[in-house]
Image 1 (cartoon, helix red, strand yellow):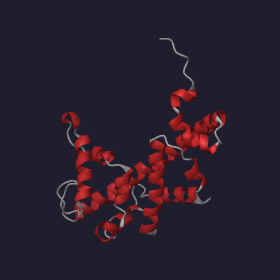
Image 2 (tube, one colour):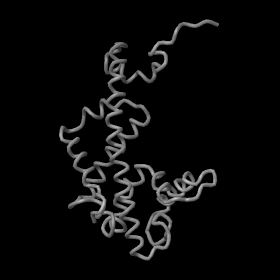
Image 3 (spheres, rainbow, N blue to C red):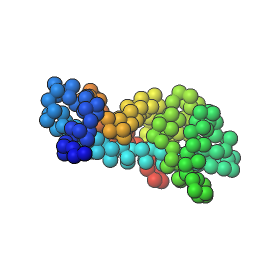
Image 4 (cartoon, helix red, strand yellow):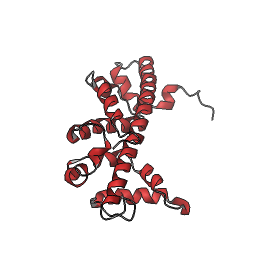
Length: 199
């Protein structure tokens, strides 16, 4: 049965456009423009978030690897019992190991680390691991004095932003509510991730 040509509004759906229509007082042309703006800004943020996430996990992984070895670990830090990880944390690692070894692939630590999401690394900076990991190990993954609570809080904001972008959600409300110095805070925090050869 013949149908009318698809419009952008049809393809995106009214439900997806709803937050943009609300912002634009129901004006569809303006909502579509805002949707396009949201996509462009999300893409710009996502590039920076990519560097932050990869740098953060690599800095923390390097520190955990060296510390675990100094504690007598004979396996990768995420497996060896010498590293005091909680059952929920080990459960997330089990999922990452499974994903990294699909199709009978050999387990490579770097691939397991890459499978662990941003939220995993953020969780290692929480109160639960203050004495177990932060004080003896993870604080050295960052240059200069770092306040763990503030770092954990700021990374949580970026984690939530990353998740909204990854699920193609609107971010205009979140970004417009940020203090004007948040971008500088983000940039400064990212640069403090341990550079090769430091610590």
